[in-house]
Image (cartoon, rainbow over all chains, first blue to last red; front, side):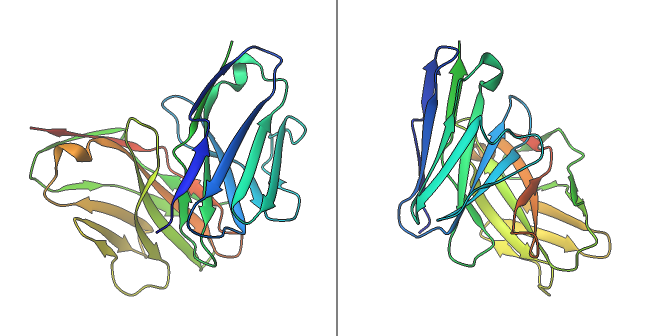
Length: 115
Length: 115
């Protein structure tokens, strides 16, 4: 199998607080994980590529100091939205690659609402 | 840069009939992968099918088949014997093998299966 989990599934926070989202590959090791953001009625947009043991690679326009990514182990990557604001409200979804396979397996996503 | 286009924002299909969801892509890279994902209202991204650019035969996975026409740069998804549970958003995506296998998504097609 290739199961990816995310926690929390839903979070509501006040403006200015930081929120951490965890992405775990449950039954395989993932050297590479990806973080996406999806606004309502839109497609997924890649935010960053996370490699175990190294710094994440961010897409153009994504602030690395605002969206902190840590990939400390082969089964866990975390995304921290620092000093969240209402415009950061979105659906955040991670994916993981199994070994050298191209296919990305996605987590169930996290709905973030910043008040 | 690579680009994925899904020209059908919404599609209706009668239960038990077949439906084709269109996807065209644009890349100058000879080595790439094409994917289809299903996203139900819960938000999770479910991997459906994969086609490599060098694969000679069209990919099939159960009721899903990918009509890969390389010269036309199209990778349409065919769902046979539609079921009510097939109602969802469907995303076509492409990865470039020499670019870290990052996925670029199309805009999506909302499929609605009528009973």
